Image 1: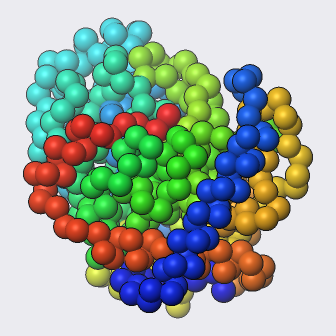
Image 2: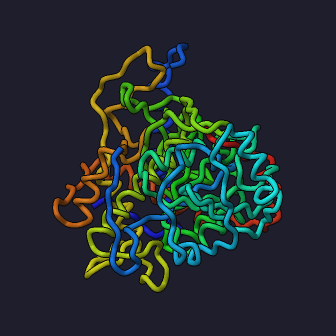
Image 3: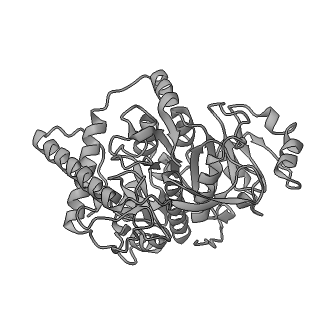
Amino acid sequence: MAEVLEAELVSNETANNVFAGLLIASILISAIFLAIAYSPEEGTVVNSAVGNESNEWRAFSVIAPIDTGINVYHDHFRTNETYPQWLLDDLGVNKVCDLTFNGTWQERYEADRADCWDNLTTSDIVYFPGTKIIGTSPDGDGGILILDDPSDGHGTAVTGSVIDANPDAVIFFVEGFSDTAVLAAANQPLVDVISTSFGAIGSAPVPGIEDATKVAVVEKHKLHTGAADNSPSPAIQDATAGPPWSIGIAGYAEEGDDQKEIMSGSYPDISADWTQYLPNHDDIDGYHETSGTSFATPRTAGIISYVLQNLRYEFADNGSGASEERGGMLVSGNNFTISNAQIREAINLSAWYPDFGWDPTSGTMPISPVLPCTQTGWGLVNLSNIEPIIAHLNQSSSLGDRPSDVEACMSANQEMRESYWGAYPSVESSSHDIIKEEYATWRD
């Protein structure tokens, strides 16, 4: 089985030598295919879950993108649904901003400045009725709190990708890219998945958010989707995508030739949609095409959200998150439970490698028939994986084991990550902040 193992320090010298040899071989293979493949040319499923009797609402899932800010005025995030008061209370909402929904983006912002934007603090958790968004900005950086500033835009696109995968997701948006920002989501009992799309350039082995994501996954039993770098660098040492408790995500050319994107991390957990059509940050209805692991990652978080929401509906689970009250389970329904490890295993089992249909003019790298795991991990994941994952988890149709060579390759991946991160030195929080400010970048 494609098991997800708990992180532990691996001390066997022989095993480490084998793992190191495998990593070197994978890099050489990737380099060969990069030389062959390089080209100078640049190249929804909707949930209809109904309300449940206990909370008089519906099955739901809460996703926490951690990013620059979000355009709460964009039509992409609008809804006729009003979140129930118990949900707002459980998410710690202490402020409600009733937005203006007439006029241009600038006119709406100006109309709301006095009652909303000019009065926000880092301790506020804000609900924006008429949207799917609850937001907070614990770092206090970036100008206007929570709102995507004119010079940003990254967070709006990231969150748009979540909604494209699960239009019914509840968004707990956190502005920032520090341990503090990640912990703001980790410490929310109702949050299911935290998604981060930033990290050190070139996957440089420097401290990042690994301490906070470990709290989220190991202590709080959530899931973390982390973007691999936008380079062919191996993801193992990357503080966002590398820790064994995180789901590291690279990119592939969905709706293209389904091959690996050249400028996308190697040896991740999985690969997802690299190029998407996502909402603008400074208007109310515009979209743009954008690419990167920054968007493959939240798309995967949205897929997980959809799976959780449907299982909760099927098994009458009226809550979300994996709190102690839920026994640390992401799904806790009628005689049915699902853990974060089971979700990861189902994703790994459902992932797939494409046929060799490489387009030499596409700018992608052909996925090698030899050790494809070193390029794309367990394989590719998109919306087509949703039904098989759900069927496997509700035990209506089990996914089969992966081939033995894939199992061996990804077991080695996991063991290298456990060895590397288990021996990783602890660093004071103040040092983390200094290093992140110097090296961190968004992955688009």
